[in-house]
Image (cartoon, rainbow, N blue to C red; front, side):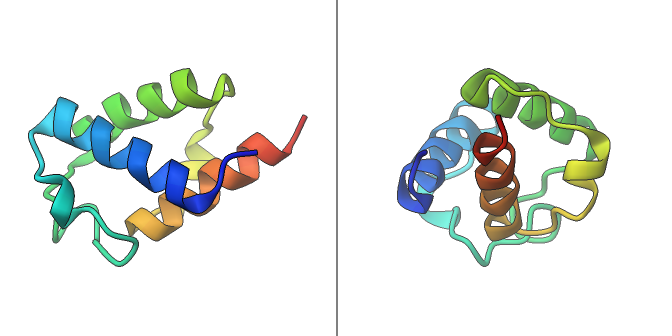
Length: 83
């Protein structure tokens, strides 16, 4: 299982690549919509990248509670812990 730091580093890379977000802005407290301007269409791309990273499907239910990068890290930890 990956550590929170490894997951955060990967999320930073993905957000920089997909949305040209400065990695220094991506921290566990950063709000996806308010701070990073990730909208629902962008979230679809992000979910796809999470699926590729984890090898697991991310359901809408999993993603529904995600508001911050910290929430996203918790979802990734949860879905990768389930086999």
